[in-house]
Length: 168
Image (cartoon, rainbow, N blue to C red; front, side, top):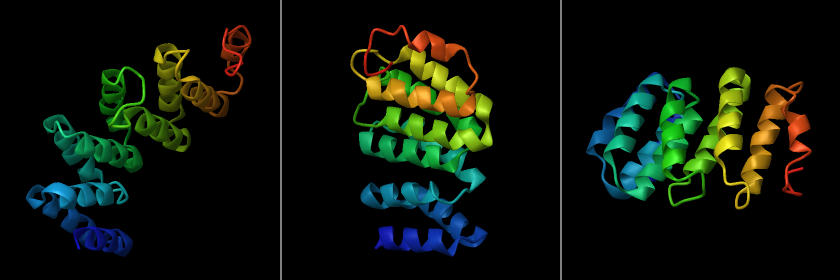
């Protein structure tokens, strides 16, 4: 029932509905909490960002971490970048149970329209830190970010000499 109610409040899309979700979050447990966190990620409610960061920092539950990271990415608040970057670094710039890497890429794509400099920073972070042998798809996604955000960058010449055929 909480999932359906959370989705309905997101669809209503008023300040009162968004704040109702925020108010319900501290009382929620288990799957209800996950539903509310996911819903908050679709609200564009600025106040949700700091609440979600606090939840992420306080939890050891990978499911709560996973949904919180995606909610932060969907909120599109540039203040989330250090938190998302820390999560992806903790995951070793690889896929893990929290999907931090996927959330970081989602956030970077959303930043293309909002803050190109931040999107470029994220792309560079991924290009420098992702294991070139195991996650070529992430390196390609970072390269696509770079191509969209800064198409005249001389970085692309260096890609031609990369040892990975798929990446070139």
